[in-house]
Image 1 (cartoon, rainbow, N blue to C red):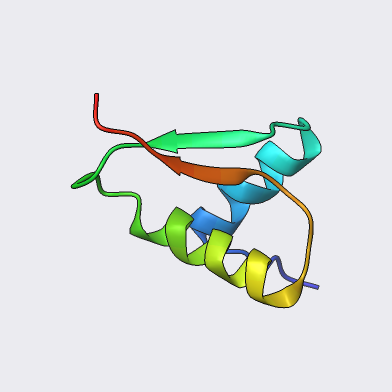
Image 2 (image 1 turned 90 degrees about the vertical axis):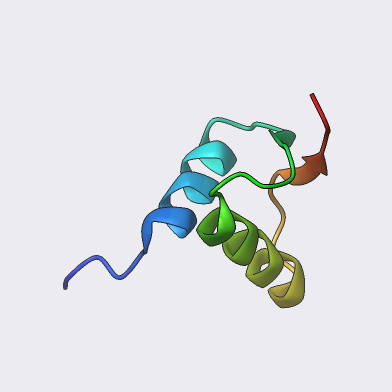
Length: 56
């Protein structure tokens, strides 16, 4: 079976496996695929890292 994860989902899954509690990001970064994967994680009720939107 072929892997169906996109880049954002792969990053979130890697963080989950590494037991990262948070992912830090600043506004305006090109992390939209990661944000979307984290929103999907929250919507589906899966555990995993929490996005912390920070300035600098």
